[in-house]
Image (cartoon, rainbow, N blue to C red):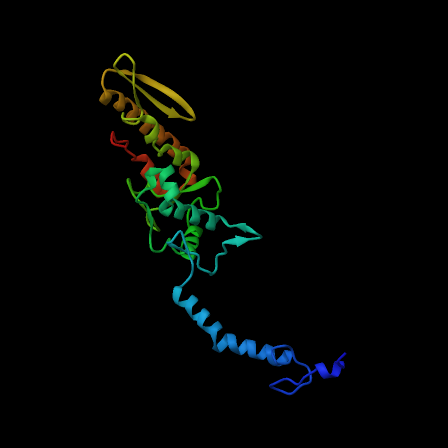
Amino acid sequence: MKNVIDLVKPCNKCGAQDRSKTGLCRPCASAYSAKHYADGKGAEVKKRIVQQGPRLVLGHGVSSKGLYAAIVDSKRTREDILWRNMLIRCYSIAEHKRYPTYLGCEASAGFKDFQVFAEWCQGQVGFSKTEFVLDKDILLAGNKVYGEDTCVFLPREVNGLLIGSDAKRGAHPIGVTAHKDGGYVSSCNMFGLKTYLGYFPTVVMAFAAYKTAKEAHIKVVAEQWKDQIDPRAYAALMSYEILITD
């Protein structure tokens, strides 16, 4: 059996009588590893990461670091949840298959950056209320861009008034269904209840009844929320028009 002393060999760098299989003692091995990372392959990896930039969310969103946190106490913040849901509507193929109305939607250059979006949220009426949702349509009809000048927060009740049901209503205008006798029935959902508006001989007449009832209902709801929503949203609701092509 070899003497233990015979197994201890000097460090190839400093000569200390204690080295590992690498030929260096622990202090010298640690110093070499640190230098290797800083000046060798480690630096190359770091450089490559910097060149590639931050990882994008859904290929577009920049989860930037800054004043606003995305996660607090292991839970995603309201800002982050809103931001990611917006990106899903804009850039998720699966979401577009479920809800085709989101096809063609996009986020503005500013809204693609999490910190910019989070900062914008702080100054918006209704942001602090969890029952309010992000809306891109009320200020600009037919708008497809989520941006600083096109979005507001609306109560779910109000937002729901403006959502059509293309897949459910079929080929007829919103609020109109064909009757088995050949005419058309007009109805409108108001305060959670489906209200029958009448039977009409033509599609145009049935839609006109729906349009009148729906626009009046939107004004009533707008008045109820007037003091809690963005003034721009209130003005848009009061002048909101239902089109037969909606």
